[in-house]
Length: 494
View: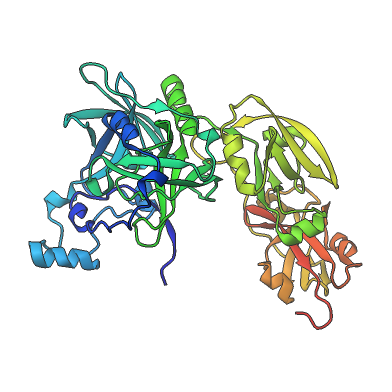
């Protein structure tokens, strides 16, 4: 079964350009009077758009971002199009040594006349050499000044005689769904291809492990492999985004594309120029969405917000007094509609600056002042992990369909828990708990926002549970914590 995946837009190798053809014909356009005229934008800005070629000696590392996002770094032997190439063009079954040196293709755009160029990190990451080709057919060697994989932005620099044409930078924060936008780039290596569409959503968080700090601009602009790193323009001819990803199960355009907001990209440029690296703010919390069961247990009117499930020791959040069970409603005045909204806002906050976090605690709203920390540049905050031992003291909850047992000091030490913190799940017998994903070895830290540290405390916290009640558990699984709402079934229910 095909599964939709996020794919980057870079062409994997030069030899894939020919097989990637077959550009589908567009349906008849509406009457000219119903569409804006894009010719002026193209004529003015095309000279500032560049074609990027990144060459690699040997196969591109599978650890690179292109491979991680499903982009091929070498021909697929099982691809029917590759079989066609072998039949009609005599391509050998096994790649020759010469074919091991390949070229990833992408797009970019000049942001200043002295030769600074923006593109995606995944276009040039790990390349041995990078060149850019201008509209006047000049090919220039480019130096990678700096890059940031988390935001997927790379800053290049070329030396050229005279002042190069540069784009105008717009304000991506002013974009609204329904506005016209325009892309210029090199899909499949076809230089200066122009496509248009509308903004279909803003602030789109993809929940990606690779890019948790980016709220993307979603469009229906037809972009494909090779458009990566190219500019997205508004009707005023200003760059508002950097084309980055498509949503596809084929590797080709299927109506949904994502661009990095230009204000995010230019912040990366500024930090690379000033510091040589990109720093991000960090609260030091783990959060999860507000599910229906959690909203019911917290007595919330809606599912908006982010539930704090874990607070890192010594973090900015701990110092500010945040703790598990708090529901973050807004950050510096920006509403948190889902848990994915929080990381981009925190990440763009300069470390050391003050931020106001509005939380819901015990049914009451309050503002908490936080001095934002700095995200480690080499890895995320380290969280404790381990497996629980199984000592003797047990307690069960027939209503919830699970049994628990006390944790000894060694188990708590392995899990990074304090004395008297948490109780281990020893058995899951009920369908509700099983469907929620609970399993033996998990640790329950809270019941209805009250800490439990023993089997006896768990029994006391759940003894009055009746059919129809929703019990909120804070559960630790490995090194991850999350809230689980269990609604006790009534008679006749599962």
